[in-house]
Image (cartoon, rainbow, N blue to C red; front, side, top):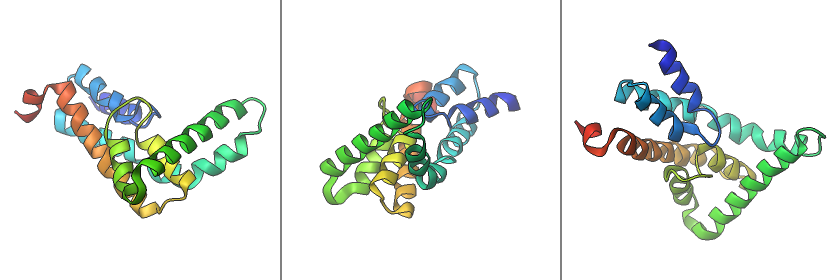
Length: 155
């Protein structure tokens, strides 16, 4: 049983998939709802400070390397595009927009992209972590409601 929880923990850490994929995996494995939710939240949030502090530096370093350069440039461009889009739409409510960007489980959104965009925009670390945390919480609740069924989740 421990291995199954470890699997969803690591799945929730994977970029793009994140807890949006880990929660349905937990459903498929018939794991405890609350424990799965908590494990997926922790797994999804664990990389956030690392992404914020180091991702831009690593991506800039690798963007001109032969083998990894194209992928790193794509990641930088994705973060930049998401950041500028977020910034232009949000205005003064930038951190609320970041919360919504991370919290609404659509393709291309999530903790990884939101944090990378924040890092590229050089937003405040503490406010970014708070906004992303609440966004992950919202995304988790939405995915739990969808995956377990709204009434099964409540009861």
